[in-house]
Length: 284
Length: 297
Image (tube, rainbow over all chains, first blue to last red; front, side, top):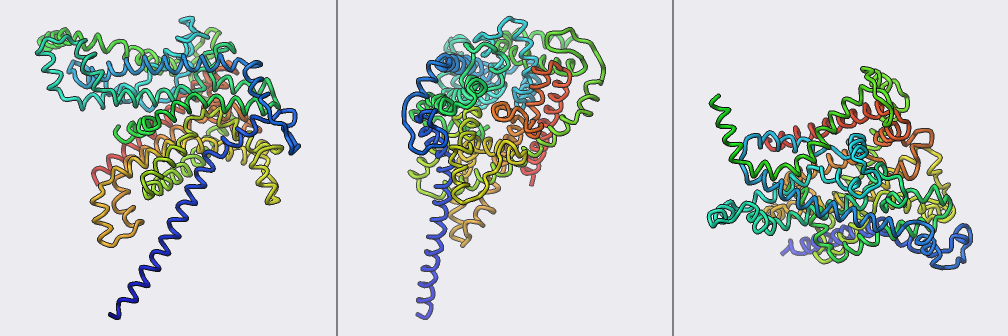
C-alpha cells in the first residue's frame, strides 16, 4: 500500500524522461533530414532564378533561363546519353560475366581454384584510382580513347562482383544442379536455366551497386575522354565551372538534372536500392 | 611424373570450368595483375606517358620522399582520414540506432529520404555545397549573417577548405553507412534483447552488451571502407580547389593524377600509387587481424 504512490510517481517520471528522450531523437532525425535534403530544395529554388539577377538583389525574376542555357549551350543531353550508355553497359555485361565466373568458383572443383580465388580476393580492396595509369595505357594502345568500349572495358575487371556472386551462388543446393545434369541438361543449359534465375537476388544487388558506382564515377571518364562529346555527366558538370565561371544558375540546374534520372529510378525501386546497398556488406 | 599425369587428366576433365572462367578472369588478370606489375616497373622509370622510358633505379622514390608537396599531401590525407571517418561512423551509427527505435513506417520513409545524397555524384555534391556557401547567395552564409558571425573564408583559409571538402564527403557517404548499420542492428536477435530488457537493462546497457558485439564485424567493415574511401578523395579536390590554396587540400589521388597526367612525370605518380596501395593493404590487414581476434575472444 505504501509502495503504490511511489511506484506511480516513478512511472510518471520515467514517461517524462521517455518523452524527452523521444523528442530529442526526433529532433536529431529532423536535423539529419534537413541537412541531407535541404541543399536540394535550395538549389532547386536557385536554379529557377535568372542568373543576371541572382547575386545581391532580393526580388528576383524566376525563369527557365538556366535550364534553357544548360540544354542549348552545353552538351548536357549528350552527357546524359553517354552516362546512360556507359552505366547500363557496365551493369549488364558485368552482371552476366560475374554470374558466370562466380558460378564456376562456387560449384566447380578444378586444379588451381583456391589459388586463383585467393588471388581475386586479395585484390578486392584495391580501388580503381590505383589502376588508372596502366588502364589508360592499355586503352590507348587499343586505340579506344574517346570511345564507349574504352570507358566500359576496364570497369568490368573489378573483382568485387565475382566475390559477391560466388557467395550468392554457393547457397544454391548442389542437388538441383546434379539432378539437372543427370537428366541430360548441358552445362550451358544448367547455367542459363538454373543458375541465372536462381541467383536473381545477387544479380540485383550487383546491378544496383554497379549502377550507382558508374553513374557517379569521375576519375576514369576524366582520364579516358578528352572530347566534350564523350564526357559523362559528372565529368561534364565538372568542366562547366571553368567555361562559365560565375554562372551559378546553370551549374545549379546541371547538378539537379544530373541526379534526376537516378533519383526517378530510386523512387520506383527504393527497396531494391537500399537492400542492394546493405546486403553486400552485411552478408558478404 | 605420376602426379603430373593426374593433374593433366583433371585439367582436361575441367575444360568447361577453365573455358568459362577465361572471359571474366582474363580481364582481371590484364587490369589488376598485369596493371600492378606495370605500376611497379613504371615507378623505376623516367618519362611522360608518351615519351620513351628509361630505368633510373630508385631516383623517383628519392624524389618523391624529398618532395615537400608529397609530404604535405600525406599529412593532408591523414587529416582527411580523421576528419571524415570519425564523424561518418559516429553519426551514421547514431542515426541507425535512432531509426531502429522508431516505428516501421516512419523508419522506412526517413531511411529513403536520408538515402538520397548517396545518389549524387561527388561532382554534383561539390557544386551544390559550393553554391550553399557562396557569400552572395548561399544559405549558409545567410545563416552566418543572421547570427552576425563572420562567415569563414571557405576557399581562402586552408583549414576551412579542408573542413568543407571533408563535410561534402561525409554528406554524400553517410547514407551508405546508415543503411548498412541499420541492417546490422536489425539482425540482432529480438528475443535476446527482450530478455535483457526484462532483466532491467536500459537501452545503453542493451546496446553495449548485446547489440555492439553482434554488429562489431559490420562496424569494422564500415571503418575500413570509409578509411579506404577517404584515402581516395579526389573528385571534390578536382572540382573545387585543384589542390589549393597553396597545396593545402592536395590529396594522394590528386597528387597521383597531377604527376601522371598533367606534369608528365609518370614515375613520381607511380611511386605515390604504390604508397597508396601499401596504405590500403595495411588498413585491410589490421582489419583482418582485429576480426580474427574478435572471433576468438
